[in-house]
Length: 110
Length: 114
Image (cartoon, rainbow over all chains, first blue to last red; front, side, top):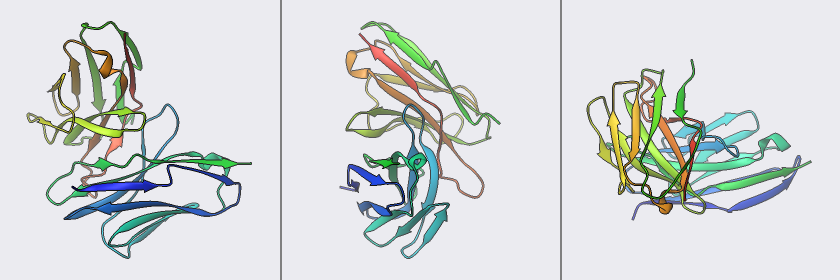
């Protein structure tokens, strides 16, 4: 069965303490791997799309990478405003549907 | 440019009542989606519309109906609400020229069924 698994479920970091979130996938025919950020009480906000192994994308303190088995969201020197739930999702060949993982809740403590 | 808008923001229903959740997008996107989000379950696709005039079932369609009213609007109807439909509902759209499958989400409708 095609699926994505996110780990850890929750992560607490001190402000400035860099870390990574993981999204491992077992998907045949992966078209794209997506990262979203979701703040409490709001809809998911698009961050990145990755299409091929070795691809990297950056936005401020966030960098997303993709291998043949997993994707990482690296957070460098996080700030309290980076606290949110981060979701990964995949799309398959021939479809624009996204299937989401359960998310990692990140808390950054001042 | 409002993006994706949803109404209402919050609704309380009694078991057996019906209601329609409204969604509109102003990005000229072809595809629109309805998801529900429950604690521990993540986002699950209810129905989607790949283009105006078409709709298809997603992962959890039972108990719901949809209407793609025009290119901008996609509504979700609960004919006879059940407590199991208590959830947060999100509408999304996709179809940018440069990135067809990236989905943009609305702010959500919080539904409580008593």
